[in-house]
Length: 448
Image 1 (cartoon, rainbow, N blue to C red):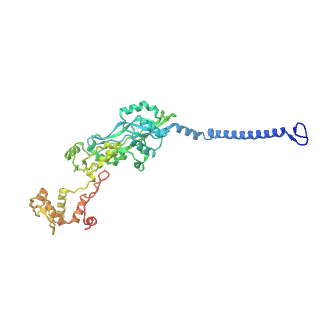
Image 2 (tube, rainbow, N blue to C red):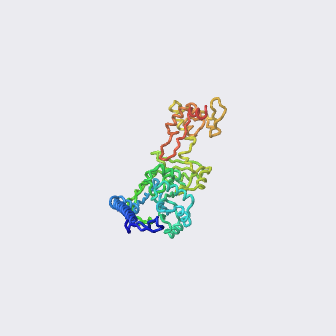
Image 3 (tube, helix red, strand yellow):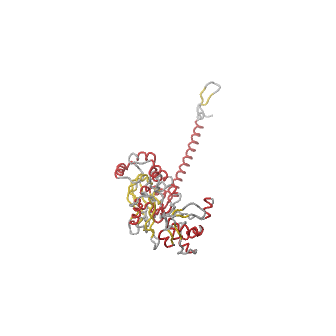
């Protein structure tokens, strides 16, 4: 054994222990260095391959993603169509207001933002709840309204603190306004904030950039025509989401204006005649059936509903004993009164009742075999009257007598021909058909 191969330390003359094996240690180090070099080369190769894959193979894909991170499509809401009366008076219009809007994707901590923002501008819990509901159902890159109709002081306070709130903007928007207030409330209806229920039934793409939808009346019935089509603006943003460059724009298409047959002057006259009492007035042009006036009293101001009336305000209307929310012109059911008398007279003529036949009116009428008296409006009676005199004097007893002679079924069938008991087909939602009873209805409802 060579001297350089092994060195021993003598512990005793018999057993000698080796201190260091330089040859084996050198070989071990060399093997470790080789393995490390191979691993390093393999990792370097993988990194180089990945770099090539990202820079060359997936160049187009990551270039597109990069552009998407800085290029956004901002919706441009359309101008809602206006509503006019027959001579051009504006019944529904759009006015400029300032809204506070938030882009959720640009906000890191929404709760903190809302808390800090409410110290600058008054934001109610109702505003926050509505904002939260809508953001859950809309894309995060779209601007969502948090607070509407800021006054001048609020707008100024936010402008001073604007840099503190990334993703929040003060925007000028068009808001629906009804200049005649309660004069056309039931007929025009109103627009209101889009609800979660609305979002489930509408095409969301048509409402990009807008928070409003027709809720009732003409506003709801002609929603498609009034709405218009949204436009889009392609912009480049910086790391803070601020717009730094405008790239392209597709302009929105404004909604159609509507011209109604209504006449503001006649509407005002009919409203004054009711003087706030419960009732309804409808004025129709006999030449073509156009509705010139359509009044329900009492009424309400539809402007209260545009931004949400609130629970207290709505409860006051709902609990009002005069029921101002009911449209009596299309939803109320009322006895026709004396207007039915000419119809009964015509039916009598068609069934052999002579127009010259005389009926004596003592001021009341009894059904055969009954004691109950049905009083005429004239307590002393009209005396002997023919059909012409009965219509002229509006004699109740004459037409009671004629109606009993004709029978319920004939009267029922004839009234349907005059459009009673069926919907008129007016272009308003929620019309009631009314009721013209017959013997079958009486058996079904009253059991006799």
